[in-house]
Amino acid sequence: MSPNTFTGNRALVIEEPLIFEQGEPQRSGVDLPQAPEIADRLGGLERQGAIGLPGLAEPECVRHYTRLSQKNFGIDTGFYPLGSCTMKHNPRLNEKAARLPGFAGVHPLQPASTVQGALEAISLLGRWLMDLTGMPAIAMSPAAGAHGELCGLMAIRAAHEDRGDARQIVLVPESAHGTNPATATLCGYQVVSIPANEKGRVDLAALKAKLDNKVAALMLTNPNTCGLFESEILEIAAAVKAAGAYFYCDGANFNAIVGRVKVADLGIDAMHINLHKTFSTPHGGGGPGAGPVVLSERLKAYAPVPFVRAGENGLELVEHCLGDGEKSFGRMKGFHGQFGVMIRSLAYILSMGGNGLWQASSDAVLNANYLLARLSAELTPSFPEGPCMHEALFDDRFLKDTGVTTLDFAKAMIDEGFHPMTMYFPLVVHGALLMEPTETESKQTLDQYVETLLSLARKAKAGGAADDFKAAPRMTPRRRLDETRAARSPVLRWKP
Image (tube, rainbow, N blue to C red; front, side, top):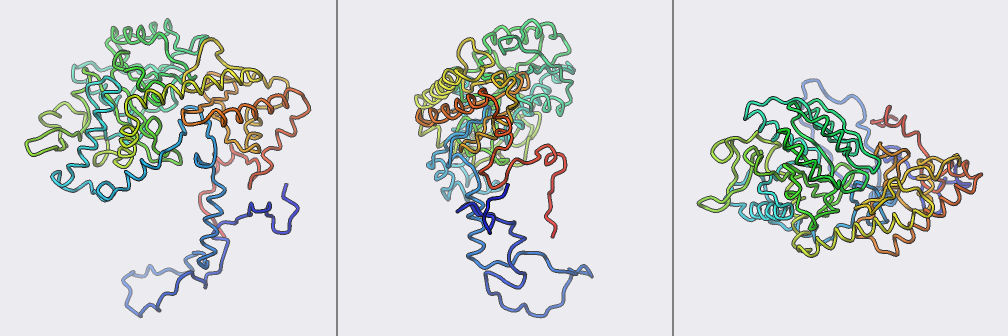
């Protein structure tokens, strides 16, 4: 429903057309001299029509992009309770460090002798990550979480092949992140799913029944996507090892246990670390990210190149599968990893220190349990027994017979000024509402969020409000869209 205004604007919320729909071709924000007449070398491929660029004056261009920025929702404008995404505050100190000329201006093709500081930064971050996990080796080059998963599985595959053991199966619990089965498939493995038990954790008996000499690895997320710590993880690790397989841990939820638990003590062989989640790099929109992988003693020889080591003339990069890298499975990507993300993460770690990282994970878990306790008054927690970790999971039982769905509830949150939580994930819970407050939100922010959700839940339960929920959001520049159609038939190019 459009507002009853001549312009279509909602007060200072301006109805903003696409930039291609504005201006006139003959206008320009700059004056350019007339191009001289020269012979072209286009070989008959000259453009036949107008190029189609908008003609805007400078203030019109500035206003357009400023208005677009005001339609964005980000961590700088509000609370971002997306579960399994760790959308937390990114201190500007980290950004400043990454923009220092010596870091921002470095080039990956420079001789190692001219980038000793950059190599030292990569090495120092790696040492911190190995210390925090208790693992003896690390691959710094993977570009993101799923890329890190691929790195870990490729190391596992190389280890099996090195001993002449061609295994075909990777076990993936239902509560794992969705990239896990995709990564295993990409690496050439057959994926076998392991169910969850009534407590939202891996069914240990079902896992043991699937373990045999065909299983290459188990890929387990811990804490898992239900926001729960896998309490039988030591027994899981022992069973996997006894079957001759490797234990891969998805470290996307490391934010909940960093400084508290060393994954080496849990029997894990490989784990990627999302620097853009746990160690405070801006997250979303497809990047940037980084996914270093820590490796156990059993896998360290198979780590990818390049890696940093001390040489006779300072730090150097090992970039070939020779000598120390003889058993390496090869290279994951061009150059040495997402360097800018590494600097941001290193700045965060050095400013926090070990005690600060311990406190951050403690506060993340405390905040999630605060949400779980308070929201349970009206919402239905999926696994009410015992505490959760860094995220609280609810299902849609509280909406039964109201005519309101999880999607309707989430859309109503937008009108209240809150970005919706993660919906319908994990798939093991019907109508899931997964919330992660992180450690950076204050009690005041969480209380406002809680009271808003409680009021929406009471409104839905009171009855007669289904149409109202289904009409939400009302106050956004765009109303509810056909998201299924948008995903299946996206319009990727504007046409006049």
